[in-house]
Image (cartoon, rainbow, N blue to C red; front, side, top):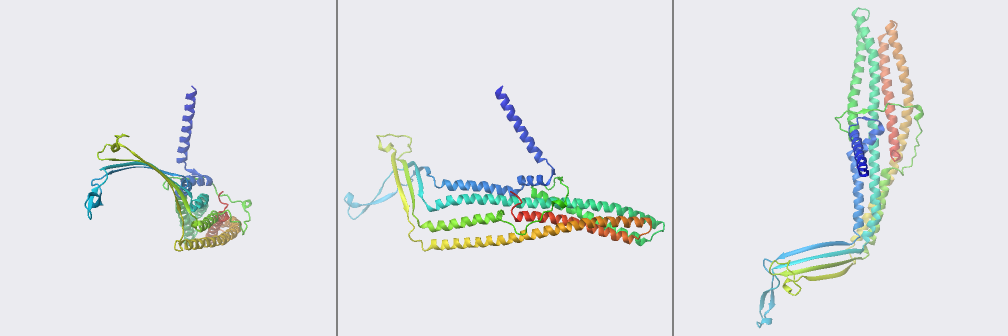
Length: 452
């Protein structure tokens, strides 16, 4: 009964895991955070970065294994179709001044054994051990950089869709109101109370609104496809975005124009590379040190004129396996290499100097990016407040212009002008919202605070 309960629990756990996977695979509704989480599980580029991290770990273990004893086994079999011939002086057989061809050996030869070697003193290996931690750190930083890039891409694409959809709603509301005014004016023209030019002015404005709406809808399709691409989501599948556009004045925070960039992944990447370059310089400097390796071999070999290696006899030499065993050591000394080592050191130093310059360039670029993003963010926020007020004013002006025109005390020119101003104010408002979101995202990325 206890075993049955255990198996039932495991089965239930597997079913729950399967259902969770299935729900995730069939998920079509996403908030911004859910979109980011999904992308971190399905984006091919990010998954490759994680695979590179695993690969770096295996590489680290490989380097560690190079310092352990290496053991090999071998079995060698030879069938001499023609036994090698040697020449011996004829003096041995009473024929001085001549050479006699003779064949030594047997037709079949076999050798089986084990060999081992161990590098107990090697400067390259010791520096490789020091460098392996930096290799792992490098791979981890690359994953963080890929994650930061992906989060920024998903965030911008997500809000592009959200803002465009809100803009479509505003255009739809404008179209409905203007359509009523246009229909009423057209009807009045048919009974002769207004001129045709009044109808045509409103029709031009109405067509402009329809065109803007259609362009925005097509833009949403492109933005959705881009979002799906960054997420690793099937482009042809339906997706629903659940977050709404909400920008409150209280959310604004002044961003510092001078930022600490030590948390930026690309900065950490260059610093890790600098450590590796400096280690490489030290490795080459100590390459003059001798290397010492131990080795050993233990073998059995047999020689037969017939293929009967499985027949063994300690008393019959023709059926005996002979043992061979040895141990040894090799000491290598780098006495003179034609100045190759010196030139390699200088080349590696230059590479390290170039990397320091790259670090300095990144520091300058990062400060510029943070400064630009901070200013853009503040400008976008100021513009957002103005454009929000402009939208309210333009909406009021448009409503009043329509009412005056419908009451017969205004002109349709006022209506067209007011509708144009309203559309322009709404466009500027949504542009300010997008600029503000993008600038905040760019600032967090520039300072290395977009992801942890």
